[in-house]
Length: 214
Image 1 (cartoon, rainbow, N blue to C red):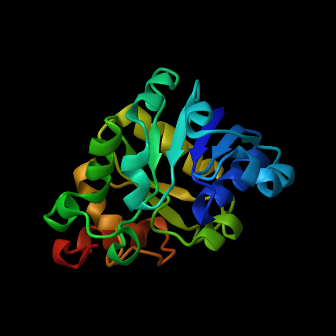
Image 2: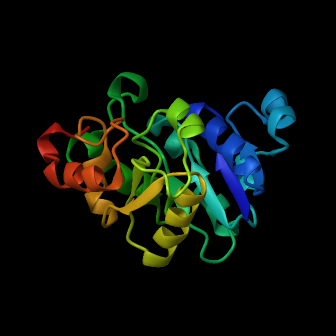
């Protein structure tokens, strides 16, 4: 599958490493330009790109940049995705890093805000696990206690594709509901960075309290 990744930080770099290992055709971009990605490209065989080039024709895109930088993305670049390509948002809102985002402070779910900025639907995934665990803790399907990851979104087919990718990466995908329910996997909730199996992840999602999220 052709995958475009915007962001080469901890999660973006990890996904680049893991997805190229799986044989996917990965193009990766950051804010500093393709020439700054030499080490990651040499390690993984991924293609260095601008954000626009990374997602052009991609069958799946990943936006994995600080929340405060999302408005800097040109929404038009996502018009060039392959038809039906999901856009995965891995982000979390940290006011100390991102500055105060009024809409989120006033209750807009983080990924719904991202969706509004890029003007395309998103699927929320990979935001509640440490990058090192995403890199190192994937296991086969028959592994007892396999870590589960929540996947939230409104488009059932797009969510299915992302859940398949989660499984390929060695984690149990759990349908976490629509995008407006994705607050249940944000920082401050019972499932955030807890490495739960599927049964306990479902319990944690159900136990989440909105006042403690974010």
